[in-house]
Image (cartoon, rainbow, N blue to C red; front, side):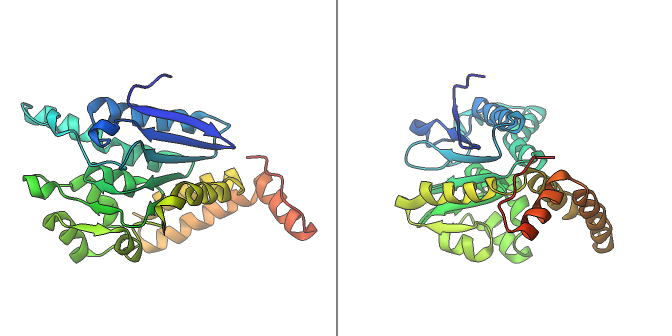
Length: 258
């Protein structure tokens, strides 16, 4: 499928989606939101892809939603519009493949939302991250949802209601990103992390990610019941049998993906 606002490529089991509106600092237009979700689903359906990287063309990752689309909507139109902008959260969570955000300079508002929606994030030193919609009388209510799974009430409310930026180092301290690296090494370090994931069992990756997103909203005891169910199913897969055999035989496993 050809896209106008995102670029896609794949190499060595790694698919890359690039937000491609650099002249607009990769702000989300309706078309780009639609195409990002379509590209994610395309990567999910591609058997040659095991891990997906999302990044931005040009100088920044993304600075939010294209504000030129804001005026003149009625309440139902606004609801449909913002639901589309937030759809990436649901799409990424439903995917079986890990999604890594690779960000530099600025990840703001819906750009921060994409960074936070990703399963992992590798960001360049000095990157500024902010849920800043409050500064124009709006709210980053979508992007703040994944924040609440990483930090407590007070910090979540501070990020939602102050409009202040945090830098990459603070985001790493809070557990909002995985790695902070020199900008010159951003692509190299992100690819190294992606390649590490491609060496794992595709079945275990898929089941592990599905476990996490279903487990996080379960009551405590139900989490352990679900854990037993998932682990027992995983034990019966060919990949689990191969992995244990390879460990005992001191050789590299040959994953079958089933």
